[in-house]
Length: 76
Image (cartoon, rainbow, N blue to C red):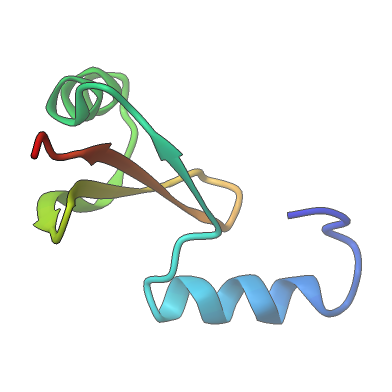
């Protein structure tokens, strides 16, 4: 989240992380594959792949104070 130096950014980011709310979300084709690939590279996930309605999702820590959600649409 930019500009990081703005005084409102840190409390906002901290509150989102505390509540487990991702700052942004990206759609992927193979959530389990991305989870495995990123985990092997040391990425820390705060939520492993989980079913959530019409999607599967996982949440990772971007190491910059943000949570990032990865989603895969379920085949319907």
